Length: 134
Image (cartoon, rainbow, N blue to C red; front, side, top):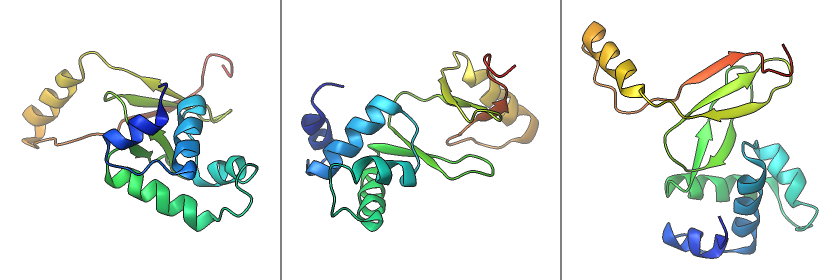
């Protein structure tokens, strides 16, 4: 992602310095929680408040520019919206990795056949140990 200002405007978001900085951090580092975003941003924006981060993240989520990733027993993390994917979470080092599953429709079909449940969306998080921690 090269031009963060244009990308924000594509989603009808004003390209404020704080939003550009949030977008840049999420692009560079991936999955970040609010506290981490705040600590990284307050170095450049000394008058920045935690409430400002929450407000910006919420507006960015409303416009589907940023997505919340809810993790069991942990604070939610945020990422830039991208192609549908799932997450692998290492329970030892807390690393979060994206995984793109080719045939997720097979899973949806099986759920529908077994339960007659019409899936509208899903967030699949797999917990385990990454290669380095095994």
